[in-house]
Image (tube, rainbow, N blue to C red; front, side, top):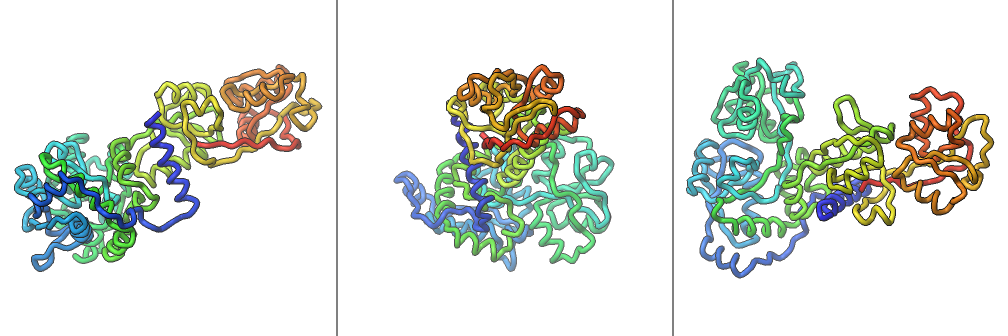
Length: 480
């Protein structure tokens, strides 16, 4: 239940975003930092913190004339100021060398870093502060990269000890990798034709392409390895033996006001390519929860097309699928499709904890025992469907004494039984089964959703079932 409540809150935030379309970033408004006595004492004992500083990763993290610059530098300085720390930047080293010093505790923390299992062995991570896309770069006119298979027989540039290098080596060891000390060297090699593909964070690479005059390079793939679901969250990290520093940093991050954060994104133009964690009002706690639970299982009912069905790739699509894709993009999570036999099976799966989300759901007292609900995302028109030769009075009272096929598990079936006891309700597994009973004269009518019935009539080629002229019966459809 606790798991579902987290999902419920996150979806409510997304609905709020859809309604108001706010461009404001989701950093909390400026707050006082409520440090514990232990944290205050720790800061007194450790007033200066050593942080990584890359030479060339603008506009996030770079060096000019010996000075640390970039969005992450400014943001870390602001966070440090909020909690009373001073940051000293260590630069002049390769990224792999900086990571080595982090392992050896010669550097205390890192900024502009992506979390990975290997790095978790010696670092703790904060919640994300930016969500930046990692994309594929190639020479202009190169074939689009949309899958691992598109990388076969290509020379792939990687920065030593980078996330792409780890993903390639762990998941696809047969790829032809060419190692470089820095992103800039990899991009120059790409321009020169020494390699064919390079994957990196979009803003940093675009900045280098622009400033290094490499106009023959373009984005040729906008999603880095969908097969691995690799996250693009940018975070702070601190040495493993200092977990208290993560708590202090996150309190400093929470104290940065919206105006302060927006000023930095405007200065470094990161808002134009940043993801949506800052756009929809997620708290630090919710961001942390998402980072731990970035795959959400969703039941997919193949019997309710076109509102929801499963495509040839096994993914949920239709109206529900479209909403889930938008939500996944905004929250930077992935929905894992779990096929169901029918609606009743979907309800059983979520009740038993086999899935976390189901769509096309109307709230009932019974369902509220094990589900939380979002606001409605669709209002479906329910109507009475009968054979063309059947005389049906145009409301539910006209079905008294009639056999009416209704999909089992639907909230509407309980409504009929409670309010129209004279109707002979026949539970069926799907809309297709209901229409089959009506067409074959084993049922007098079906009460169902207009788009689903119209879809099934067209699919099955029924010619003796008419679209009704009776008034519609409205039912809310929501996402639990």
